[in-house]
Amino acid sequence: MFRSIPARRAVHLSRTLATHASGTHGAGSTTYRSYAKKEIQTIYDTPLLDLVFRAAAVHRQHHDPSKIQLCTLMNIKSGGCSEDCSYCSQSSRYNTSTKASKLVEIEPVIEAARKAKENGSTRFCMGAAWRDLSGRKRGFERILEMVREVRGMGMEVCTTLGMLSPEQARQLKEAGLTAYNHNLDTSREFYPQVITTRSYDDRLDTISAVRDAGISVCSGGILGLGETDADRVGLIWEVSKMPEHPESFPVNALVPIPGTPLEGNERVAYHTLVRTIATARIILPNTIIRLAAGRNTLAESEQAMCFMAGANAVFTGEQMLTTPCSPWDEDKAMMERWGLRGMLSFEQSSVARKEGDRLGPDIPQPSAAVA
Ligand code: SF4
Figure 1 (cartoon, rainbow, N blue to C red):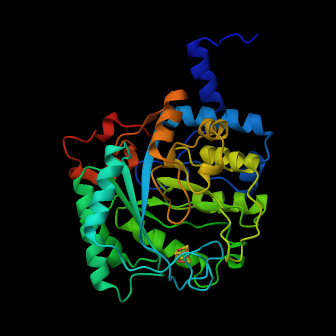
Figure 2: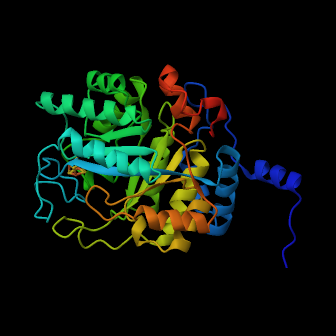
């Protein structure tokens, strides 16, 4: 039989086990301990339940563990992309069932964001399938208007629009963009086997432009591309070396798409997914870790273990960009069963800080926010 630990000792224990921010790396108001790749590998290789226990302690030190950020994703321009990302159904190089479409009008976006908000989502993300925004002046203006409208609803608004120039990032910030998603996908070493049409450094340049514009960074990876443990460690290490840790780190489990080069890949093993989440939680203590594509393939108990290991955001709603998503009602019921609640908009203090004066009276201020 287990004996409960007195509350004060439990807090002390959690602090002893947690990884402390140590002031050796990072910009802005938060500094972090730097990790050598070997150190991250050692953490990653910890027996799994010990690793989850340690990650859970870090999670409790830096976040309210009962809070999950609910995000809803909308594909605002699908298919026909010139890039060759070997996992993606939207690349024009592969024969998949995804059809190319034009950029959607503003009205359906407002409608989808309103529905997401009514269902409890606090972040609305819009993705467009293209390499970059060059030659898309009118389309970009429409996207800026979408950003203004969604932000005007009091929601956090995120976009993923391929590569960005510093000037485009500045305009998105001015329109009210909260966050920009640009994944590193995998380690620098394995990356050329996944994508050849843009380099790892191209990705880092876009992330720098986003960061410099004062926009929160959302950058993570995909598991199940055929990478090794060392590549998963390499991805976390690359992200941890950024001048500031990204505010969000999405973890996607590849959903193999017929017609893509990775159609025959095996799903990533569940224990590998948990191990990666737990390691990321320890190395990136303040970052929100988002369970992204592939979550709908996990049993509820498997998702709960991911939350225990430090995941604290999900995509919820009708659809991911091209793969299925867990619907709001199922997620609400699941969260109720596990004692979880949705995060408020701008509850993450590092995100709220970037909003500055734009935070209205209806939105909680950073002092009341979680890490
Ligand atoms: S992941 Fe994005 S950039 Fe790559 S092919 Fe798909 S839509 Fe294009």
